[in-house]
Structures are given as C-alpha cells and as structure tokens.
Image: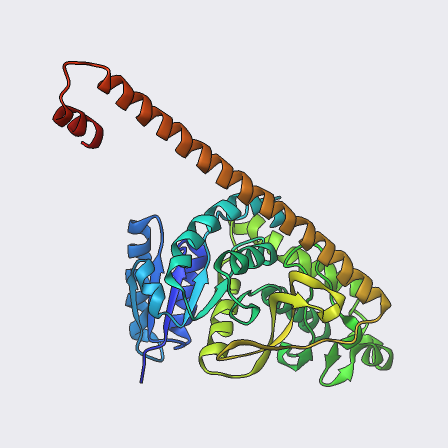
Length: 358
C-alpha cells in the first residue's frame, strides 16, 4: 500500500498544529514540513514525531523541500503572519499575497497533480490567488474557508440549546471573516426546523437568537486571539478532518472555499459553501435554498471577496514590477562595472572575466 503523504508549507503555530492533528488522527503515514525557518521546522517535526508513539497509526514526520511536493497526495499551504488583536483577516492580504507568490513560484514548475488546500488568511482570496497562480482546476485547489466558522456556529447553537453539536445541520457561508452569513432557513436540530422547535419549546430553545448566533460565530476567533495571540487547535483539527475526508474518499459534505461558476448566482470567485469532498477533491457543490434575505447577504459577502481578489491582483502586479525594477537596476550596475573595467587598459580579458564572475 502506498504511503499517504501530506506536505505542509509553513511550519509555524498553525502548520505544526495541523501536523499534530493529522498525526493524532492517524490520517496519513508521512508528514513533511517546509519552512523558510529551517531550524523551527526541524524542531516542530521532531516534536510531532515524538508524539507519534502515542497515536493510532504509524506516521513519519520530517523536514523536507519542494521536491517532496512532487509525490504528495495533498499540499497544505499555511504560510503567513499570525493575526494580531484588532486585525481582520482581510488586513493580512498584502503580506499573504507576497508570501504566496514566492511559494507558487516554487510549486508551479513541478506540474503538481495532487490537491492543494490553503489555510492562509484571508482564506477565500488566497485560495483564489493560489488556484490561478498554479493553474489548477477548482476541484483540486480550495481552502478550508468557513469550515472553522461552522464549528464555531455549531458550538454556539449547542451551548444555547443544550443539544449535542453532532445533531445540528447547518453551516456558515461566504467569507471566512466578518461578512459571513448563516442560512438559518436551512438550519435543523435533529432534523427539525429550529424555528419550529423554538415555538414549540421556548424554554429550551428560546435563547436561539439569530443575531446573537451570527455575532458569536464571527467573533469567537477574535476572542481567542485577544486571549492568547493566535488560533491553532481549531484550524488544525478542521484541516485534518478535511484531509481525512479526501484520503479516505468519504464523500462527506463539508464547507470549503471553492471557485463558484454559477452556483448561488456567483461567478469567478471563491466563497465558503457546502461541498461533497472525496479522493478527487471537490466532487459537488450543494446549493442550499436561500431565502431573499440570505441571498442578499450572500451577494454582499461575495462583493467583499471580489473586491479583495481585485486588490490581490494589484498587489501581485506591483510586486512583480518591483522585482523587475530591481533586476533592471542590478543589470545596469553590472553593465556599468563591466564598461568601467573594459575602458581600463591595464586589465586583460582574463582579468575582466575574473572580476566579473568571481
């Protein structure tokens, strides 16, 4: 049996917790960590490898390089700076695009045939940027998107209603951020419309206020960052669950930020929607029957995403222009140096060669 291999690019707080969640879940047999900080990547790899003695399966964890990506089943991209208190995910766009441009420049020549999952923020915009940069189909390049938002949503409803979160059918849609929405018209508890349950038993279900639930879903991440400086356990577990869904070909419905091509009335942008996920990645997109207010909210969150996708393109062009300018300046400096050497009679051709290429 072939080893199931996952490469994680970005081995900081989030990347290392993704590795830990994969190892503890027995999801794969090989985990490779890549990072510009080689010593930190090596230390995290050794730390997770030690923990593997106590995990369900046998898993090898080690540091690697981009050549390891060629044989990976899944590449997880988790590069980026941690979000600071008071900072939105959208505020991280410029730095994230610059980092992803470098990552994609290494991945593009590999002609990678597996699946890429991005968790770098802002999630929807970075998923779109990565897919375009690598030229991958939407089935094979997407983000965890609103999967973590959905976990927070279900926890909120569970705590308010006193019902196990596994008995809830609901999800968060749109941006992985402050413009996300909840399709309450499709939300059920044990298969029952939650609004019907609220009317039937106001004592138990009367706390299910839609404004409160939406606010909590959006703000829980901010509270975690305010309290400890980063989120890591939740996204690590969410990523591991999505990877498991793919590697075990579960055909399970999970929210993911995928390219929309007409679904929900949207075109050419990534947004969080429920998807059927299996061995080949995104197999299908589930289109929920949104009411008028929910459809309007979905259009608004997509407008936010679309605006920042355009900004990401500008940041990328500016970065490429700056790189080209630096190359021109360096080229001019080399030309001037060579011209200066050539005009000096005391230098032979051998000396010119040595001075130029030493």
